[in-house]
Length: 171
Image 1 (cartoon, rainbow, N blue to C red):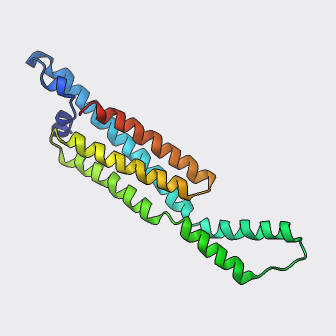
Image 2 (image 1 turned 90 degrees about the vertical axis):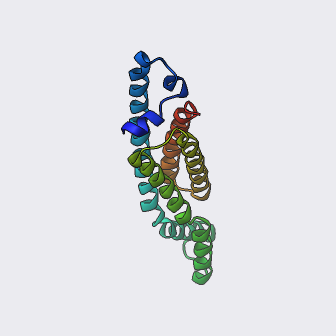
């Protein structure tokens, strides 16, 4: 963490007199540890979304069948082919694979920044990655109509916002 922690010191701490420098270094180290812990929370929540996303088609099929039976009556029949068409359309609209991949990639890039150390200018890069993570989380939330996914998206958005607040102090 050493070099990266120094990069995460707020600018005011880097300009302090030498006798106060250790305090700024401790602040940078604490900030780096906090950001790393929050990235892991985000990636765990993302894993739960990915696990749940695989079930969307089956859930949609069951919900549509249930609604049709309620509307048409228990003994009525409906066109199974048409039901499958609607399920396919729903599955396409709710596919969050690309968003999950991008969100995971951004999280991995942040991990790499922490592992490799960073330059003071990395605050802008972190801010950009966090902005992109927030954007992907918003898209996932808009596409999914599932309570468990909504909870995970809220968790991701909260953690990303907390990280952005920390990173804004670096800029």
